[in-house]
Each structure stands twice: as C-alpha cells, then as structure tokens.
Amino acid sequence: MPKAETAAQARVLTDIPNIGASIAQDLRGLGVQTPADVAAMDPLQVYEALRGPMGQRHDPCVLDTFMAAKKFMQGGPRQPWWDFTAERKALLKNKT
Image (cartoon, rainbow, N blue to C red; front, side, top):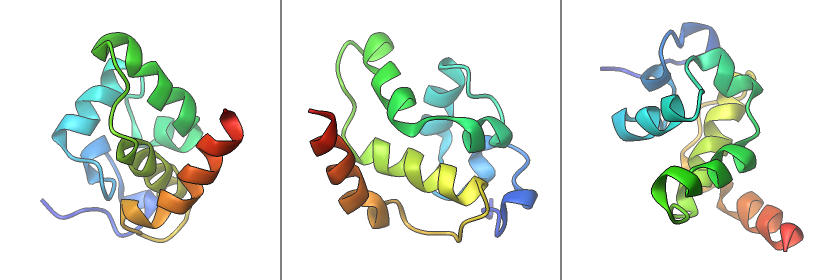
C-alpha cells in the first residue's frame, strides 16, 4: 500500500512514511492511535515508554522513526528515518 505524500493524506498510522505494521502496533499499544496523535506525541517519551511492555529498550533507530513520523505529520517532507540519526544522537547525548 502506498504511503501518504502529505500529512493530510495520512488516515491510519501505516499511511505515514516509515511506519509499518509492527511500529504501528507498538504505537497503538502506547495509546498513539491516529496520525494526529503522532503529530502531537513526544517521540522520546513514546520511545522510552516502549521499555515497559518490552522489558528493554528498543533499537535506537525506532526513535529515529518516531522523529521522522512526527516531523512528517507536522507538515515536514517525507524523509527516511536515518535522516534523523544525528538529531537522535544529539538528543540522547543531552539526556544523559
């Protein structure tokens, strides 16, 4: 199924670029149900919340994916998740 080209076209989580069935399931499990919820979420907070159900932290690339999805849903361009790796590393460095 093709991904949305703009945030307005995203009707379900898997319409968002970089969000597949598994990540969508993780998001729904944390209460992020709609593309509008993605636009409003704190990617780091959602990433950290995955530790509870999983018992361990997910791969840091999941945070990149959340950051890419939020940016897209706030009107940004479609970007691959790895475009957010440097931003994520800086964010986590400042967190510790």
